[in-house]
Image (cartoon, rainbow, N blue to C red; front, side):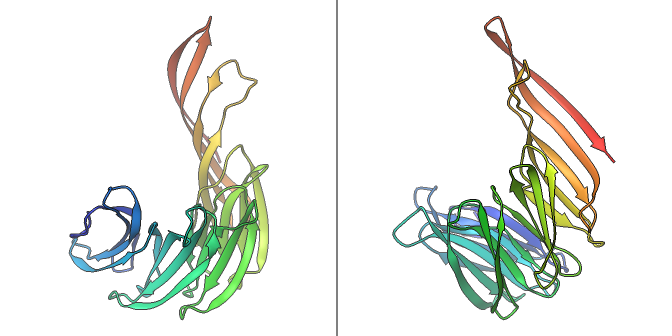
Length: 278
């Protein structure tokens, strides 16, 4: 439980330039399981609670939290649409550095799934969510005052991850039929390039360094019917792309449990490998 908030657990965390820590969590109902709202807390570098905010909703929970360059906090929450648990509404709330609510926006109804968020150096906040069109992810951007400044969509057969670069560029990572996919937009959300990295998996995390280079990671499935050994393995792969989308480095860490079938009897085997390609 957070700071006297019973039946809660952490969901996301962020830090600001002063090394304060912001935690976003999920409130749980009397049964200890049912989501019942979001809790947001800010701690000093020494662990002193500076402020907290609690939002109670039916089937609601925190999805993500981000901090901009001046210390403003953005809380993204998800909750079931009234009368149903099959569709959701996203709520985006901006807090000042001292915890005062600045504005709140209810975003379009979305299908259940991850709700990624990114904040650009200019203070634009971008949110993504799975929409009603199969294989498509909706994207919206609001400015520092809460005005909607852009909306778009990207094709992806999985949930996506978002990151912003030093010049305000937006990177969207996900999956298509051929493997990892990366879409890059400029600071005005004009499409710059699209890249596919062949793999049986999906990019689930993405980051951009101070030079604009992109790092993405996600699980890769190595199970193939052509192998005599039945492998049930999702392996973490990490890729580094230059700012123009060229692969700079790749690493695959293999941690697998393999069931070896011999004369109708099985035994478990464990293997661990690491391949690096530079």
